[in-house]
Length: 182
Image (cartoon, rainbow, N blue to C red; front, side):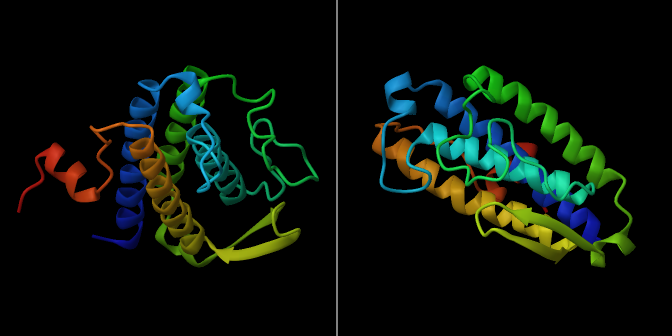
């Protein structure tokens, strides 16, 4: 497996987990979805928006837009709890936008030549108030590892909401579901 194929697989897994999280979240009441927790972004809803927003701005940076902000973010200010205000109305809206974003990631990764992995990608970080310059491969890995970290927080919140049938999140579960056996 080449480096680009490995990155494609990791992003395929990330997208699969996102879909599983959205399915689990759709079974929650609005009160559960927005319940405050002292972890992650503070609620299942805010954490899902954070996941989407991070994936959105990093893809924009990969495509050359270093100053992109996620829908609902206020340019020039820390996003805090503003993501979603005027940007994403509810879970069906988030699902639609996320599916479109996943198609953009798939297209981007399909056209990514291996020699581009070492190129610099620049993004202005609202949170850090600084310009970041990273290798393209590191950005693509960061998007996945950031997702893994945040997904664990969302699963913990789902558990605390009383969800007993937690969404599958492990790459081995995805591979098994696909029937990928050695």
